[in-house]
Length: 312
Image (cartoon, rainbow, N blue to C red):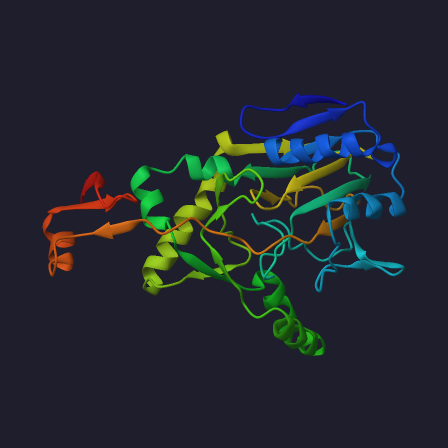
């Protein structure tokens, strides 16, 4: 196996590896590379549908999407087949997959079957790098916050269709809107990443609505920074896998009416864990006044001493 980094922030090509013939040592190397590079691109994969699903199961349990089109014989396999006769895809928005679940996916594995002559790329953004781009003051503010995640565009589509509202109600009962940390700690690397996205995140808890909206808009905008992005161009039999715990992606709707057929499996993850809240303090009985008169407000470390003074 040969690993070739694709850029300074995220992404790597994996050469000299056939996924269906991979032994346990190679799989361990592949999983380590996924955590390190967040997006892996494997060209020229002779991978059957059964091999695709078996690969996903090496990472963990496969999930069945309640919204995306599934293969009749294999409900765990999502088939994304679009052309000029298709409705507009819902994936042309930055998102992490299925954060409406209490245990969002660990990773997604996508294979190209039919690709358009031009367009149809997939864009990725490292939310680890996005977190690292934040100021120290913003990191302290975000520490310990949680956000509510819902069904986003999927919910809007199903509510507008009387025949599908019953399915939406069933899925809502199975997936009551979870509260995930705004800053997620990666369970394998311990790196921190922004874990809100414009598709599924509804609001931030414990702050006023206008503050929540302003903060979410700001955090959503971090994925738009070109320095944090990677664009993958597809060819038939290319396989791309990404770490859903630390990456967002966007599929531009720029290839229609050409045909684009992709197949994917999604691996169940764990319950997201956040960072510990930073302790923000002010003189006793004067918290509000200190925040609004320019007096110093600091953050305390585990020993109770001020690490840094912030003049607000």
